Length: 468
Image 1: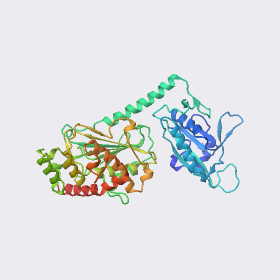
Image 2: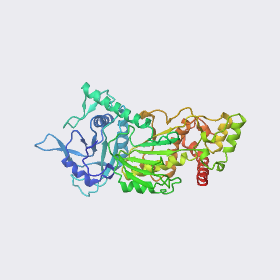
Image 3: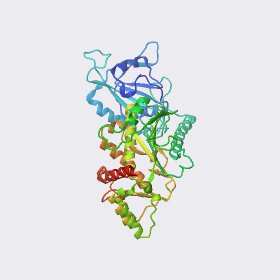
Image 4: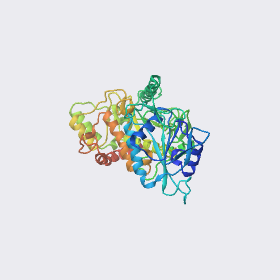
């Protein structure tokens, strides 16, 4: 959605910005409502904007019609009680869930500051609820009455669509979005012939389940550099710092050279202005590090030898840095989004390339026990996607950037959910990395139980890297 009646992103809209609505008519992009109506009526408004060009719904705004105009403009701002905001937000959330599929929307509560009885101003204790609905890429959004509603010219109420050509266009929009996401997930990194046989991890953190290419981030290049360069934020345990920065056609790029050749495939992060952060992470084999730091490696190798499985450290994939890398990149994405005022949920996907016939290795007691009981996992595919699949529904949904911005433990847990997907895809079930793990236990407590073991492995992997 490109139209906005405001000069600020939705998260910065305040009471003074409401005055601009007196020059904005209802119609294609805007709808004024004095109160928050029934869920089905709200769903009709949400669906109509998502099915058309996107738009804005203003709850707590009284419409005024000029004598010479048939269009409705914002008249006064009676608002509604601040105490009713939770109920209003719940109504809108319930209304969105009535639609199939559920559209994305975001809200901003604007609180009144005026004192007195001026009917034209938003008084203290009263609020206007601003709802922004982007153009939906997974159209059509079907109302519970079975109809598809759209916006039509200067009409303030949604209209049920009956034109078959419009239905076809909406389905084509969804098909195009799915194809775009699939292409992004399946794309292999651009590597030299020498590098193409090495294992790599690619991470994607999307701010839209369909990787919508329209720009939504307000992140400036200077802010991107500051965040990418920072070693850590607050009490963050794991951090990655970058030292080379430049722009691209769609956003910004940061690379970690650290003395490596500038033309080689090094750790790289890109942030596109549609709110997507991607990372290319070179992976290592155990043979390439000072592996005597890994206390469980001898135990694993001895067991493999006892069952006549040959040990090739060049085919053993070092996953001990995996958690720290995913946490650090996710934390960068959270910072990018919060600085760029992107408040959407995060959807994640990981791909691993050139990992065929490799054996994953974690330097933890749980993994050593898993190998002793089950033998080694051997990756059966050249490339692995985690979670499996390339559809929007297959993405791992994580918390919104605002929900975890200042909470390192919440970032750890959210990042670990993606790590679990990666480990599973590489042949390690939950019992292979969670002490006394239970396959049916998917709660946060079981993940927290594994973090101490994983954190120790990260520390040993870091020591091994420094000794190499």
